[in-house]
Image (tube, rainbow, N blue to C red; front, side):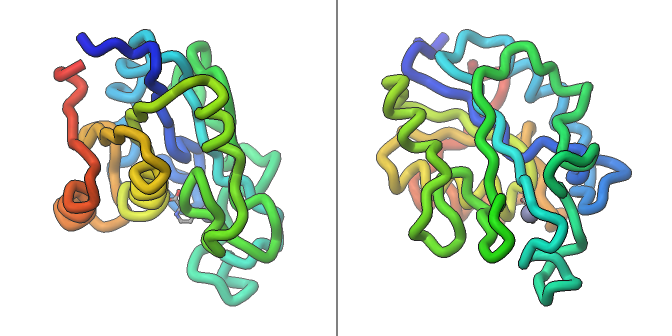
Length: 190
Ligand code: VGL
Ligand code: ZN
C-alpha cells in the first residue's frame, strides 16, 4: 500500500455529458464509475474533480466554428457530476474552459498554454507531489492533464480501467503517455 499522504486523486471530467446519454458521450464511459469510486475510498490527501464548464456560446462548440457539439454548459445537468460518482470524498473542484474565447483540455493550463486553472498552485499548497489520474476522455482531457502533470514535476500515474477515450482503442494514447513519463497502474495495485 502506497503512502497516499502526499498524493491526490484527479477525477477528470466525469460529467453527465461525457457519460451514456450525454451530449458528447464517450463510448463505454459509464464503466469507469465503479473503479473511480473504488479509488475514491483510498486515503488520498485530496480528491480533485475537474469539470469542463463552458458558457453557452463557447468557442469549442460547432455553432462557433469549433470541433465539438455543445456540452458541459455551466450550470446545466450535463455539466454536473453524476450521482453515481460518490461525491462524499471529493475535496476540491477545478473548472476549466470557463471563458468563451479559449478552451482547456488540461486541468492545469488552458489550450493557449498561457493561462492556469489554479490546479498546480492548489496541489503545491497542499504539499502534493504524486498524482493518480483517471476519467474522460482518455485521448483528450485525461492525456492533456497527465502530460502537464509530468511537465509540472509530479510523479504521475494513470489508472487505465478508470479511463475511456473517444477513440475505441486506448493503446496509442496509453503508449504516448508512457513514453512521456506517465506510469500505468491498475486499481488492484493500490
Ligand atoms: C473533452 C472534448 C471537449 C474532455 C472536453 O473532457 O476530454 N473533450 N471538451
Ligand atoms: Zn469541452
